[in-house]
Length: 164
Figure (cartoon, rainbow, N blue to C red):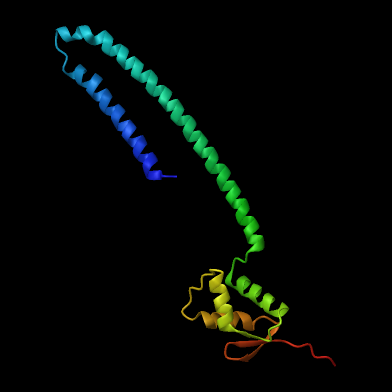
């Protein structure tokens, strides 16, 4: 949708109508002299006609506005529903995103998880990491997960079940 084009067309149309009314009705009224008043019935008829046509335009514009509002409300409701479904399928916090990466790691065959790998996966998913030191934040989140144990700086391993 070309917003600028629509606004320009609407403004141009309104300005043209305003100028035409000013030129054809207001100015003649201001400059009428003694015998010019014989034209008054024609000008009055023109004024009635313009008023009727403007009222029709207002009604059409009201209908167009109502339709746009209806479209907006419907689209807004649908977008909110879509957001709800996304909230069910897509993590909404950094911790949830990291947990999803850890879930993949725990299920997978790899034995070690490095912070840099997690960072790359999150960047690939376009998860915003607005921290001075994202690796430290990610390490902190991963360290709190009970399924992993720390094996060095930025390196984690799956916990093994100890049989007695």
